[in-house]
Length: 239
Image (cartoon, rainbow, N blue to C red; front, side, top):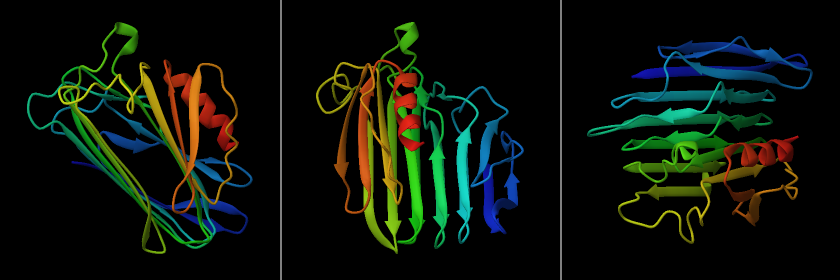
């Protein structure tokens, strides 16, 4: 089991990291301090997520702090014979706190099994924006929908009320993932959720996107034949 835990706190006009703890292969780079926020990059001393890996990540943003959480590179999910790998992410944002959660896209390799869960608990006067981009596989190598199973669940609670839930179950043996309602003849799909932020979704070449209202906040869905296209679309929207 690998653990990464950090806490961001507002001190004067700056956000600082007051607590950080991690075990191999997870770690964080030295924080990048900006005028209005602090950025933390998660790193891994591993080529990717292997069968049997269990990642547990906890991010705490205290009152008034502003944190941006990113990752170093694409998240690669390797082949599994039996149980696959698991990732559990818990985020807590206190009153007046802000978090931009924008890890790089995920690539599920052939015969991989992955279960990832993200739970966010925040206050009505805090802000949160996140992105989640998934590939059909190693598309550049013509590996498409050859993974065994990919399950992803995102739940956002505002003042202890469930306000957004995204529950994905992708199993190529059970459904045509290239069809309608899934990747729709594309190789990559992405989701952006925002509450308290006002992302500006612009027309982007080679990206199809749609915006809908959640119970609180908004959700953006995008499909493309390139993870970079969706990534850049979302990145521009968050500026």
